[in-house]
Image 1 (cartoon, rainbow, N blue to C red):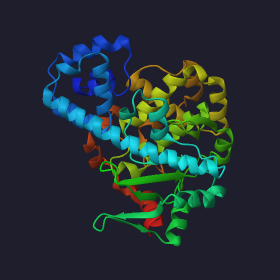
Image 2: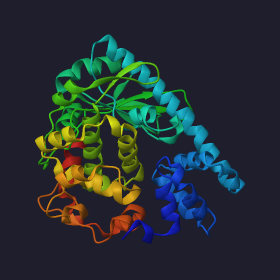
Image 3: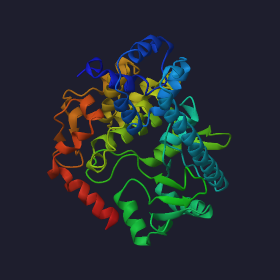
Image 4: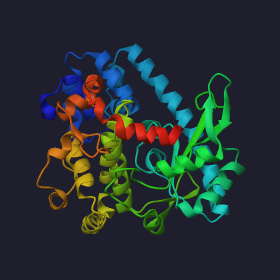
Length: 381
């Protein structure tokens, strides 16, 4: 199915999920002048975390005041809430980066926290629920010490008691061995919109188990570059490694059962992240070097998956020769899921249907849960 063949509501969701160009203004006006089922639009934008970007685009083209006042109140409220919530998270990030700097640790910031600061047009336009970072496993002790010195606890939140319960040493070790990260760090906050601050420290950008790929984290850390994040020094992966990390993150969450089963697999904001990152830094990306590095790590299929779908959703952004260099002969893998199993399954729906229809979960192959169950057993015992 082509983008032009989906409903007008879903076209609107796609169009406004990224910062729009001036040339797209007339298309937006035309869609808004039609008969729109707003309940579908708002639901999709909330579940895909793009409602604030929609508001931003409407404001950009002076179209916001044309909306029904109740819709404006809803969007104004969400904008204000996530403005305060994100600001709280970024303040915590500044404290953490300051502590890492004292200890001379190079711990790159990943995903939403970084992109909200250096890619998205306003801090409110990228919603995130935790702080993501990357470390070498040999740095685990000083990283844990740094976070614990700031009051963070490796544990789980007890909602009934409203308290953080530290997990056992065994659970910490098992989590580190079975997953791509060490156990989450939590800290209570007095901010009413961010009562619990979560820090996720990754030690691998791929996944554990039946993963045929390997990217050495030490290589990524070695190439990391300094970056100013709201007036404090931090680190980010270099321009090429950031693309690789975003691609690996999106691919594994789109195709692994653990995320599919919880409907966290296909989220529009993850595709928007990659598209907007490439658009923002296109002149600084050495495409030939990207091709070489992707092939060195044998990540052709993962990266092509990402480039294929962001073009389908938002239009051309990656040079043709780059896409062609990664394009495999057999494209059937683009519709596969449960890739942690020896024999993946295939979706019976086209991409846009599975992107927007939550009922996709009703058709998943339950027999493919074996790999997911092994992961959960290792993680939770």
